[in-house]
Amino acid sequence: MPDVLSAPLVVEFPFTRSLGPVQSAFLTGLRERTVLGVRADDGRVLVPPVEYDPVTANELGDLVEVAPTGTVTTWAWNPSPRRDQPLDTPFAWVLVRLDGAGTALLHVLDAPGPDAVRTGMRVRIRWAATRTGAITDIACFEPYEGEPGPSEPVPHTGEFTDPVTGIVAPARLDYVHTPGRAQSAYIKALEERRTVGERCPSCRKVYVPPRGACPTCGVATAEQVEVGPRGTVTTFCIVNIKAKNLDIEVPYVYAHIALDGADLALHGRIAGIPYDQVRMGLRVEPVWSEGARHVDHYRPTGEPDADYDTYKELV
Image: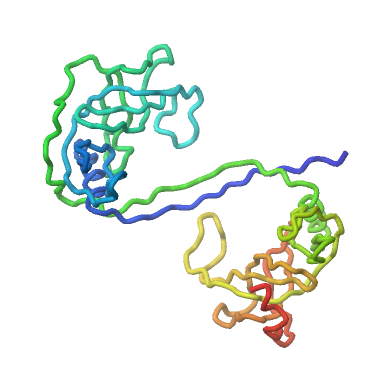
């Protein structure tokens, strides 16, 4: 039996968003050690606040301040914290209904063990030493045996000095990918500087990279077909933002390339030509990475551009 291929993969990007008046007030309030909620049409105080009523869809803006103390409504123990989680020691994920709020806030509870956590226990906010206007300004919750906070929230204007108007939330997914039979054959061919697809026995289309089944007909594919190495740019984009850990100067061009003999365009970077001269129909060929088993980029072949009718179905 051949060795099973596997490789760690990371998908990571920063998600940037602007904030409306409600979210801006909430996050700025955390920076100032103030927890704000918003009153819904039915009178409930929603914490964290939302911009539109979840029942009526009406716009909300009646901000109120609630207490930094509350009650755990449910919880789950996390014995092995992962990278970038709020605490680096075992903790409990908790839903906490702050005093004066009608809904619960998801955060973490610093506790010595699961036996120290229970539904109904009283907790309070432990503020971060350095606060920037983010949910992490609440470092965590901690057990609390003092007096409860006011049950009636206090009206608040939501106005602060130097309000937070936008946030950047990093998104990251770490996983291990194990290719199946079709992808393993594709990767093995790349080691030999060949590109191999598979032909559907029904519609006769050749898919690159192969998927093991035809996405149109839904039948298994097994017949291997070598395609390329040359191909045609069907469409492209100019990248102007430099990606993290990618040693490529911007601007550069990333394109869909229909390899000769393939019925599905694959992705590839175009180099060897000024970015503003890349065009649909451009004929290109692969340039292989030295000592690697993948194509580094595609460059122009010098052939005349392909006629649009020859690749219009792959745009």
